[in-house]
Length: 203
Image (cartoon, rainbow, N blue to C red):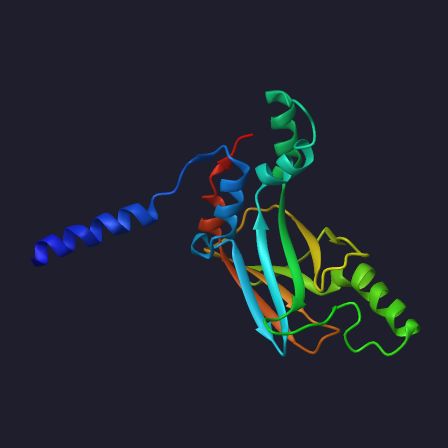
């Protein structure tokens, strides 16, 4: 009986650890990135503020550029992927936690002047709040862009891009140092193996 249970455990482990080398369906690619077991999404909720950090592979970023075109040649696809291959891109969402109802652009804002200052901080100052640490070295983002300023959604997305390097060790630590919502310094640990082993998305 013990031998049978051991064999079943081994089979279950093999099934869960087996990752596809190539993904061709965009929905499957999105599901892979969203599955927390694959290590590409990290979350934390503090004082009603939820922070989510997701790694975005180069092939998926290329697909988002090309998806509105009727046809994309193999050469153009490869060119788009190479455009993003020399950088490391994360999608950061900051919004209300579960059961909370507020717009982060207005949380704690008392008047129009305060709202203007809040938007200014989110658009122009957020680059100072997000860093990447590897082997004791801290790196600034080359680009931080807030998406959908006029969105009706309660949270806001930020595209955060770092120059790609020869990363050392097994971990990359994404730092978010809050300057608005009193949630302090937050660290999100990504395994370099999880990032390197993302299946190629071929579209």
